[in-house]
Amino acid sequence: MTPINAQAMEKAHILVVGDVMLDRYWYGAVERISPEAPVPVVKVLREEERLGGSANVAFNVASLGAHASLLSVVGEDPASHSLEQLILQTGIEPFLGRDAELKTTVKLRIIGRQQQLIRADFEDLPKTEVLASQTRQFSELIASQQAVLFSDYGKGGLAHIQDMIELARAHHRPILIDPKGSDYSKYQNASVITPNRAELQDVVGPWQSEAELEHKAQALRQALNLGAVLVTRSEEGMSLFDSEGSSHVKAQAREVFDVTGAGDTVIATLACLLACGLTLREALPWANRAGGLVVGKFGTATLTFEELFA
Image (cartoon, rainbow, N blue to C red):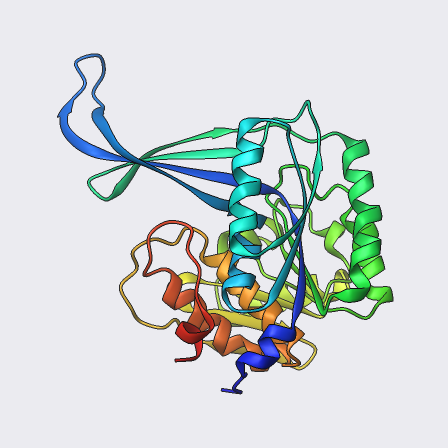
């Protein structure tokens, strides 16, 4: 696999754009079942807050040693200020639009006996005028970046993604997209999209063989003028479909503790390596290794440069 040195990584500037979230974890002990309903009673002993959504993607970029800028929209609520403080602690450079009527997305996970018992989501959609101002900010930032990464969580933060893609193309920057939903037409002209197996099936339908998967992925790539489609396939590894054909890497066998945020780590690693000058095919085995390492950690997690290239 093509090596990268830390100095090259430090010079890489990645712009991450998308929906940010605050991940809250309440950890506790489960000692009895509720008399009100057949559910466990969790005595909360510890609380933790982490970066979620595209903020976690940017954190992955920063953890690898690259410079991460984060463009997103938040509310004017306590969760937004908690999120901003976490972002600043990681060294990410934030460009956050604010909408007083928006509720900052919070995902609350209650953990008992080392497993997630329930998740509660608090969210709504940002205003169009706030999103339009983000496009202007994007146009000012793009020239100083080596790659741009769109992290779509379907929360409304990427309503103007097509305008941003065209701006990035005009500056000849690699454009990486973690997609969401069943309509990928808004991602046309990107360098690479990284759906997981289930997400791709929602768009192109199921497949019965590797040949059928390749046919469907290549048809999607050509229809949307994409440079490549990278499918993350859990225990089946990853498959890259580009103009040269296909390339596959096997999953790295290790104990899987938590798959939360593994896709964030994969695409962040890809963006960093493309910004350092590697091709997608050269970056693929490293992204696969990154995904394999991060699933051995609990919750939304990141990797350091040393862990990845050890």
